Image 1 (cartoon, rainbow, N blue to C red):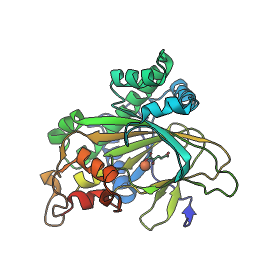
Image 2 (cartoon, rainbow, N blue to C red; image 1 turned 60 degrees about the vertical axis):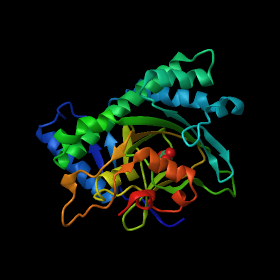
Image 3 (cartoon, helix red, strand yellow; image 1 turned 90 degrees about the vertical axis):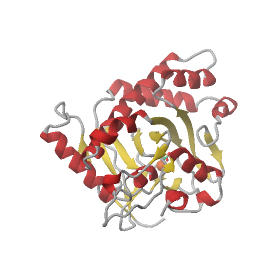
Length: 312
Ligand SMILES: O=C(O)CCC(=O)C(=O)O
Ligand SMILES: [Fe+2]
């Protein structure tokens, strides 16, 4: 499986109340994000808008969800967006997808599919958690745009076109003689992904030198990872983060991933194209790229799907 190092990925603090556009702390966090994403494709965000009660509740309701019988779980089958589990290629892995999770009616719909007689605690918890993580996402995107000097021109329309999918994931511990690969190496097709986990580590990200870095999540930290869509948008300034999950411990791991997607066409801003950085991608339909990946054998062959889909 290659060597794994315990080298740290950058930790960036989002807990200060003074973190407002225009302040010196804002400017310095913008710089930290920019250097972390260009260097590593990811960073750990220290973020305190998910209270300890909400944190506990989201993992409790996730457990409740995974305890449902299989015939109920598969009601969430929705192509690549829904339930994935009990797959021979990924025996440790199981997950549910809730699309448009920051829209309350969509969370209601998912909840009623799983619990036809209702489960208000599940619904409120998932919705509140997703809204809190969405706020972190919006701040990170604003900072990335700000750092490239593009915030005024592009941020509002970008956020208006953003949708979010929450994936609730569980990895059981491997049995003896079973591989500890929880999730094979991949890049996400999202714009950004934000991962949170319970107390069991397992996520590994690939450094530029090819080594795998094991991510140590301290309490109240979230991993922010670049997906292939931001790689395209940034004209390759930010590379998508290669990552995988390895289950080294004898305990079940639970995690949550908030994936952002853009409705419509993504185009490299003209400000990010110059002689040193010629245009690398044709304008692309984000959803089209995702269908190309999940729906075609050709789309799955490449290390970077986007390059095959619309690279120049
Ligand atoms: O569980 C994790 O930490 C990562 C999950 C992941 O990479 C994914 O769902 O794409
Ligand atoms: Fe992933």
